[in-house]
Length: 249
Ligand code: FPP
Image 1 (cartoon, rainbow, N blue to C red):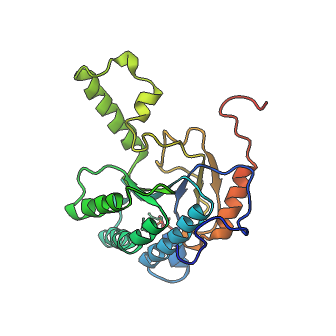
Image 2: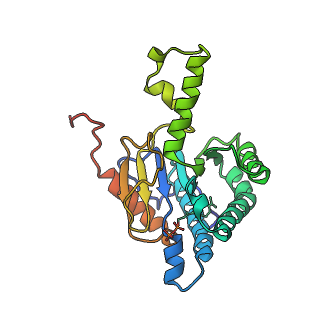
């Protein structure tokens, strides 16, 4: 974050339309490392640097919400040493960058299932959220132990319980009631979701919320992400015609 301008400057290009909420699938850390003859964990380390550049871009362009896919509920099937490396990087990232987040008015929220996480991880999450709770600028959502289907299943279970407890009747269940049970309750849906490394799929990320998102896929591996790629992506987004199921006027 430190190497980049913190606010929109005269050099920041103006876009006709800016996304209010951006979702990012940071893919290709391992392939980037392998292509460089380095161990995969080096790719994740470089991925954190790219993440810092992303947050700086989001602050510069005054994006309201940035949701990053940092660790999926399926990622636990990776080798233990890779899981530990990613968790260690996350821990260090939060510990070292939290004061910068506060300085740039960035609020951190962690989205994902908390049951089953270790005490140490829960502590890290709670600390990141509580230390930035008063920030009113960019909201950085870190999707951790996150799976879109699991999020919907948890919401359905919770609603079923509410019905069983007589708190709500089945007729009252509509989209807005379901949305209130998601991790993203009270946040706008993502307008734009982008993914690095040439893969063109959602991989269980923000399944409900992405109903009308625009998708941009680019070939560079995540560690190669920079401000030019971000601007290219905004350019692409601002040229899209969003109709939300309707017709253009
Ligand atoms: C995808 O690359 C990336 C991940 C599964 C983890 C992303 C993690 C970080 C950027 C670092 C830790 C997170 C934070 C919030 C500090 P991949 O391993 O799937 O790459 P591949 O598809 O080339 O194997």
